[in-house]
Length: 317
View 1 (cartoon, rainbow, N blue to C red):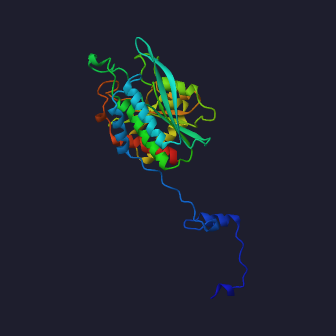
View 2: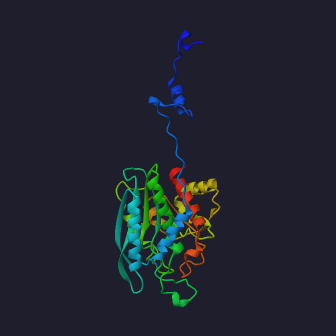
View 3: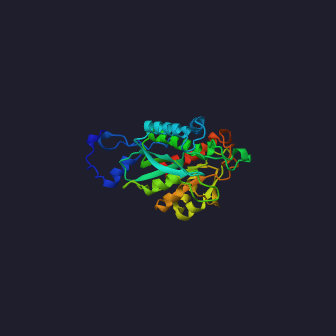
């Protein structure tokens, strides 16, 4: 039977039925265009991140004021300028040590989708401890540490995240900030620590305040166990809950849903500035502030767990 022989009037479609037709899988949308398909989240590579950890360690200790520190900083700026839409270097004077000395330090800020008003921030510190004051051998107490986990691990994850953001446009504006001057405080005192994040928080650009921030610090331990940090939970509970809910959904076993420690870290100045911020840190790390903080204590699998979590926060929920 030919369609033209039917004399019944064609029923009118409601706007709802038209929209449903457009949204059906395989349906053809307006002007004959196929519907937009959601792209899966990009895949994070722990192996690539581990190679970036090794690359940082090839410079040696990145203690502020040293030639090694300057060379690694130039390397990080160069990588991010290849990947980000915009990179800014934020210099600041850093005073530390006994007797005190002042050097020029620098935060490195990489922006993706800088035009977007809605922004999220991911950060880590790229400097390393200028002295191995926790080393079992007193002869090493004035030597700078290599900082494979305490410094390089968080940076490595964020450099791989930057590559993925370059290749996959994020839904929101994203900022990656590598803080300098985090690890030169005096043992047993609050003085001298987190100098880069303090400077950054005090000089937030107008219109650049992120909706939330996630700090990655010491997340490369081969025996990774990330507990909730107390200040993060107290002042940014919805963010912490979201992170651990996401980790559970992804089956990331290294995220343990209970509080174990309170840490003086780069998230605190952000919290004080009114930005919800969570510190992801495995503080149970025996080589902390010793000469034994070397790449063999870290693993690609640990970096991948954290990287997968960050990618899901950006592209998932």
